[in-house]
Length: 145
Image (cartoon, rainbow, N blue to C red; front, side, top):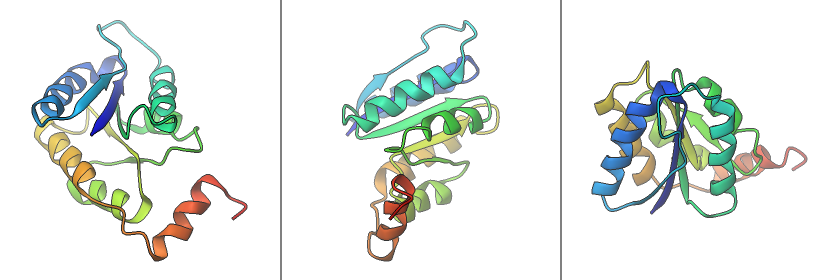
C-alpha cells in the first residue's frame, strides 16, 4: 500500500519510527516531512498530506502532531479526506469500517509507540463495511446529498 506520513516538530520521532515500521511491513511510504527538529506549523504538513491522498498519490495517510488535534483539523479541510483522530486500535478500526477514513491522526505526546503501531495496523487492515454506512460517508464530502 502507498502511505503518506507527515508531522510537525513535536511528532518527528514518532513519525520516523512509524515510517520504518511501515517500510518493514512492505509498504511504500512517502515521508512528507518535516525532516529536522526545527519548529514548523502543523497545518502546512496537514495540507500537504491531504493533497497527496486526495490526488491518489497515496492510498492512505498518517498525520501526527503533539496532540493529533491540530493536524487532523488541517487534513479535514480537504473535502476528499476523512481523517480520524485515534488513540487506540478500536477507534482506528471503526473509522475505516464505518467512515471509510483515508487518514488517521495521532498525538505523539499522548500515544506511545506501541499503541501507535497497533492503531496503524488496525487502520490499514480494516476494510470499509459499505452498506448503510455508504450514504453517510457520501454526505461527509458532499453535504448537499
